[in-house]
Amino acid sequence: MRALLAPLLLAVATTAQADLSDDLAAHGLRATESALAALPAPTPSDRFALGGVRFLAGLERALQLRYRVGLSDGLATATGLPVLRLPLPENPRPAAFEPPMIADLFAGIGTDMAGAIDALAPIADTDEVAVAIDTADLWFDIDADGARSPGEGLPDLLGWVLTGGFGEATLPATTIRFDTADAAWLSAYAHLLSAVSEAILSLDPTAAIARVQAARAAMDALGRPKGQGWEAMGGEWADLAALWIGTIEGQPDPARTRSLRQHLLATVADNRRFWTLVARETDDDREWIPNKAQTSATGLPFPPGTGPRWLAVLSDAERVLNGDLLIPFWRVGPGAGLDLAALLDDPPNLDLAGLIQGATLVPYLREGPVATGDSLRLFDALLMGDSPLYAVVLN
Image 1 (tube, rainbow, N blue to C red):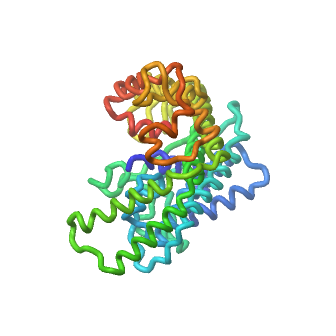
Image 2: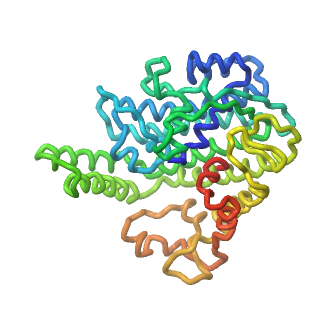
Image 3: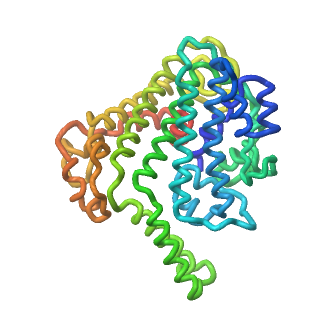
């Protein structure tokens, strides 16, 4: 559940001035987006604010769709996909769910992320950005009624994420001030979610959802097993397995897999730019991700060396995405592996048996240097085993 930590926290990027923070509290994300987009001469801070609003609006779009059609638990959360696994209140009168809705959801997220990237692109390294906001002012209009309801605030949702569903349901609000370096961080996150959207859309789960949904309805018409035993719970997992297999198998869209790769490379490039800029900072004013002389307003400690260790992880990822490092595969020796760049550039027709046995991947296996994971192990050691949480924050 921690995988939504950083996207939720980046809501601090959504206001450039105090009155905009008030507007967010009173009117929400979409109205604030319209106001920012209409500015005749936006400052770098305004552009940063617009990028943050559009990013958060993409998450709000997903939460609203899930609530509208009753995707509050079950297969939605079990998929483990970003934006689908965050728990939501149950809608007592949900609309009918249609199989194309998941693809439409990620297409919409992709559109919002593209808007965020476009807003951030003109911000130069020499520009002055200062965006501070109290996270208590931020909320997602989950039920789309235009008003803030209990449980829709950022601290409410963030509390659930940080505790993994246990402990305090609400976290204390805090004020964070984003600056010029953080524009690169925000752009990196927008590229990362764009990559997720392209991955989903390259496979398009619509047909698999329709098949599982129709079969489930037919079997439920004959009576659903009661209780919490295997007969009752096993059906959920069987549906999920069928959904994943049905989605994975088939021909991915090459245009989308190529776009996926480019977005991931842009994520690495923006991260590299962020760490270059944050190292130059001399202030210590309510920082988001600090340099070694600063502290984070989130209360999360960042040990000295966090930046270089994380950049080493990303450097290995970049080499994998470019085909300079290969991914280990269990059926070949230590001097050979899978060329991910070649696979994403010209993806094969996927089938589960071929992926497990290796026949589908043979054209993409070759000799060459193989990624070892050493940089990731060093990163994890620095953070004393908390690397998954920090990886989410750092993207």
